[in-house]
Image 1 (spheres, rainbow, N blue to C red):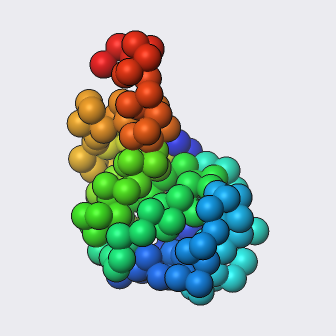
Image 2 (tube, one colour):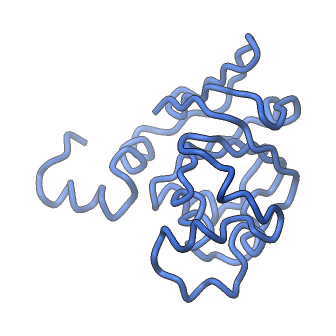
Image 3 (cartoon, rainbow, N blue to C red):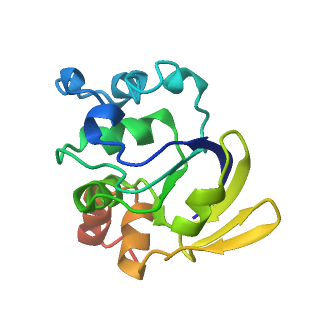
Length: 166
C-alpha cells in the first residue's frame, strides 16, 4: 500500500463537521458526499483534489462526532490516504473500516508543505519526502488486510467466502 501524491496540508483539530458538514448527512451516494468534502474549510477542495493525493494534517484529525460520512467523503474524493500527527480514535477506526489508509507521523506533519509530493508506504510507515525518509507506525497485519480488502465489510465477505489468505 504505497501511495505517491500531492500534499493537501491542513492544521490541527480538523473535525468531522469540517470534513463533511452535518447538513449533508442524509446523502448516501459516495460520489455526492465527495462533492461536499471539506467545503467549509476549502470550497474548491473536491474539484482540486486528484486521485491518490494525500492529506497531511496536525493533531486530532477527525475529532467530533463518530459519523462514517467524513472518511467516506475523503475516500470518495479519491485520496490515497491521510498522514496526521494524531487522529481522533473513532475517526481512525472508521477510516480503517471503510478502507481509507491513515498513518500517524508527527515529525513529517511538521515539515510537509502544501502542493509538494510525498510517497507514503502505509504498511511499513515509511514516508519519502524531499529526499528524506520519515518513519511513522505502519499498519498491523490485520489492519493491512482490512484496508487492502477495501474496508471491513469487504474483508468479512472475503473471509466468509473463503477468498482470503488471512
